[in-house]
Amino acid sequence: MAIHVKLADILTGLECQSDESSSYLNKKTGEVVLISEYEMRAAEEDSPIEDFPDWERDLVRIAKDIITKSGDYIYLPSKFDIHEYHVIERFILSLDDPLTSDHLFGVIQGSGAYRRFKDAVHEYGLQDQWHRYRDNTLKEIAIDWCRENNIDFDDESS
Image (cartoon, rainbow, N blue to C red; front, side):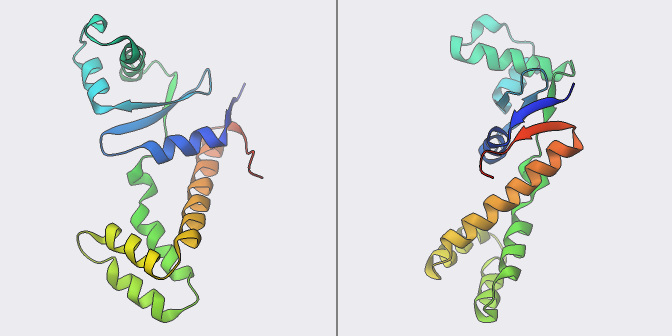
């Protein structure tokens, strides 16, 4: 039997990840959970569950389950798998105005590129277009990931 999830939950899991946390899908329940490095480290060190506040105990238990490779959890594509810099480059290539594209390509070079890109997108009034493009790209990544992992999904936005 295939897993059944809400695509919106997968998208939320993708968007909530950071350098300090990763999202996982429970293959039995279809629930997406966000586990921090702190919780994962606690699980790896086999810290007593009683050392954690009630709200965090379940997350440490899940982290232990992930570490033991019980097979109940699947790692969602990470921010590195998504590679937002390439998404930005493809967005810039999709623009009709070559002058705007050229300027944006210049803006995304070097450190601080994402901040400068966000500022330039605001300056050009492209925020809505950028957010739509990014959201659609994340949705495509989520759909491809679901299909690759034999996961049925509901897409309420269609």
